[in-house]
Structure formats: C-alpha cells, structure tokens
Length: 420
Image 1: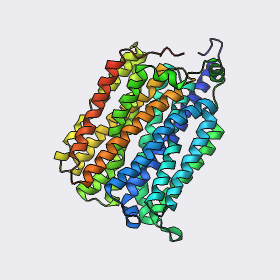
Image 2: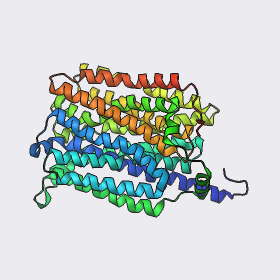
Image 3: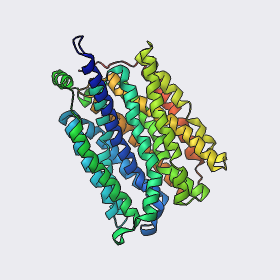
Image 4: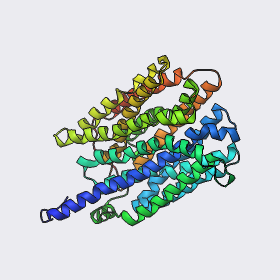
C-alpha cells in the first residue's frame, strides 16, 4: 500500500510503470503464441518436405504440450527460486532457440524434438506473467492486468497467419525452403525481446522484502487442498478445448473449405483477434465488479460463467457451409475462451501468497496442457479413421460448462488457502 506521504507525482509514475510492465509481459506472450502457431499454419509447406499423417500431427502437438505442461510446474518452481526477472530471461532465451531449431529439422523425429524443447521453454511463460502481476498489481487491478497480458495471445495469433503466409510466399533465401525461415525469424524475435526485458523489468522493493519474509509453501502442501485440484481440473477441461481450436483450426479450414495458405491467412486471424477482445473484456469486467463492491468470489464467478456460456455454439459449426459463419462462430468461442482463461489464470493470485503463486500457476497450466494432449490425440485418431470433426466440436463445446460447474461445486468461496 502506498503511504499517505507519497507524492502524487510518485504515485502517477509508479502507476505508469506498472502498466508498462503489463504491456512488456504481453509482448512476450504474443511471441510465444506466434511461435506455437508456426507449425499449424506452415503445416502444408512442411508436409511437402516431411510427409506425416493426422495422428503424427497430433503427436507433434502433444510433444509440445507434454513438456509445456511439465515445465509449467518446473518453470513455476524455477521462477519462485530465481525471481521473475532472471527466471523469465532464461526461459525466453531457451524457447527462442528451440523455436529456431525447427528450421533445421530433416524429419519427423527432429520436428518432435524441437516441439519438445519449445514446450520446455514456453511452459514458464504464464507462471512468469502471473508472478509479475502479483508483484506489481493490487488485487483490484490484477484481472485487468492479466487481461492485457493474456491479450498477447491474440496479438501473436493474429500476426501468425498473414506473417507466415508472407514468409512462405516470399522468403526463399540461401536456397532454404521458406517454411524454415518461418522458424528462424520468429526465434530471432524472441531473442530481441530479452534485451528489452533485461533493461526494463525490476522487482518492486516492497515485494522483495515481502517475499523474503514469507514462509515457503511446498508443492505437497498445495496438493492437499481440494481447491487446487478444482482449478487444475477446470483448466484441464477448458484448455483441452482451447488447444484443439488453436492447433486444428488452420487444418479445419484447409480440409473443410479447401483454402490455400493465402486465403486462409487472410481470414484465419479473425478468431484470434476476437480472443484478444475477450481477454480484455473478461478481466476488465471482473475488475469493474470488484471496484463496485462485489466480492472476489462473486466477481470472478460471474465473469467465468458469462465466458463459459459462449462456448457451446461451436457444436453448430458442422452444420454451416459458409466459411464466413464458421469464422464468426469460432470468433465467439475464441472470445469466450480467452475471457475465461484470463480469469482462471488470476485465481492463483487470489488463493495463494506471492511466494508460491508461480508454483500454483504452474500446476494449473500443467492441467491445461494435459487436457490439450488428450483431446488432440482423440482428434488425430478420429480423423485418421474416417470420422468428421463433429465429435471433437461437440466435446470441445461442452468442456467449459463442465469446468465452470466443477469450480462452483468444489470452491464455494474463492479466498486465500490456509497453507503451512
């Protein structure tokens, strides 16, 4: 809390710095979503040199998600040990080099290895973002700040389709296939961000002292609480749907409407743009409720419920024969998903001390990644065995509703956990 003797100028300066930190972290998340979208959007070009089936494609997605989920936990622990500034620097350097390594792949095994390494690096991104929010923002502003940060997912995903299409159609440099340059260029972008981060981010002095005085909360202690399992389970369900949309939407457009990369790239960014608006609306709505006297429990659950209600519409996609309507429905789902995701990611800051918020955020992210692995494998098997996308869309359209019911039943009141 800022003391009464603090000058208005100092308060304004701190507030400006606080929001600049949110945009700095948002830029990193944008790069992470650009990096993870490289394979889905460049897949047709890659398959010319390295042919593989739908099941193998699902396996490549799972390779990323398995290590991504594990490193969500490992990255959270690493950040709680190294601190946000040093920890995020190491994470970004690693994942940028991993992204660039895709461009050197000569076969499926090498691609899988690069996906594994990319997951290791990117798994620490959101735990770092959660720690930055906990360090810099009071509770009333955290959902809005996380909305800005989570909006980076949309920025990266919006940039990905047209940028990758541009590289694929123009960058045949040094005799290398254009799809290889997609990975080299996106990896270089992440390395440039690390310079900005190291020069700009500092942990607030009051947070350093506060963290030093807090008792460490163990992973085993967190797992003793049913609330922890509820949030992890909710993330497992909702992110299973999200990763299906994220990794399979480009292929769905290619398969269902026979679009080429230029056409798909010209419209494929729209749902991701809607997801960015969802990030801001979900977090902003929850913060607006808090500032008007609604409890943390009420403000989070009202916003979560409204977000989940937008998701079942994707079940109608198989009945639509207009690409415009399909893009609209997916845009609605992407809006709801990222509104939901912003709020779920802020729950660790409502439930745990700053000392262990990275660890709890890591557990939550691990649950989400494993949901993505499971549904992705199911979709790959269904597609290779002659099934349409209908079963996957029905399953994914129901998962957020199930996740919301889980949170309401198991966490009657969102409040700090009593940890030892």
